[in-house]
Figure (cartoon, rainbow, N blue to C red):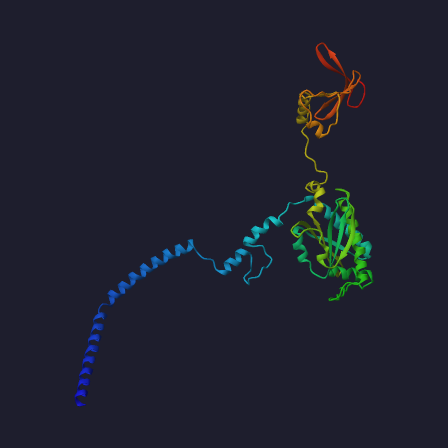
Length: 379
């Protein structure tokens, strides 16, 4: 036992000696701290250069994060589509909402505002002010989705153009018209009762106002193109007021109607298909616009036309054959003509009958003596 204890004591002395040697080594390394610091500085510089090269490579092949992807796709910071057409969505939809400008529409609806101001004053026996907010282009489906409910949607037909339009009356204007027509006191806002369908009286009163507006709209288009807008039906659900495909283009006119402290909005939607019959007239910058005439060119064209060579055909007789008879004709077959010496000959050019004459001969040539002109008068 004692010997073993002596051995353990000896081993402890050896371990202590090794630790002392390790401490001495550390002290020796401490003398080279300056060298180590220099090496670390060199490594840091190399690391900066490597990071610069890595940044360059990342600048070329950088991966977009989710926020940047949402921004390109047209979503806001919350990840929801806020209705603003941004990024790629703006590029995709730009061709769908950008349409040609129709200058004459501004003139027509400016006349409509003045006419409605007078007619609605007579209709309500109140001081009515009508103002035009804006005229914009929109897709029909986008408009139906943007209508604030409850509202009344009137479908009307343009008889001469054989197409339809849409007139929307918002709830504020509905209650204001009902309040005014039923003797509501002035200076007080119309009372709204939400959560119930419109009554028969309310629908009837709004329908009367719509007839007045449609009459003014017809009168506004009268100088440009006579048209009669006829009331078709009145709906409260936008799905039942579909008059065009969702992607079709339309012109939206927003009107503001104020009756002292009451009033509301009236929106008029005309699809471009409805306005197509008078598109050329709507493209005019002013009423009766015409391009200037070039008298010199007209005179030159008339002179050249008189010297133009045309081919005139003398038609002795016409016969009607079936396809089978024509296909059975062979070389050597004879077709009998019922023309005689006294039969008239028709002179044609390009399938148009020009003159009428009699067959004859002048020397060795076959000739036609013209006996009637274009108006059927004997020459």
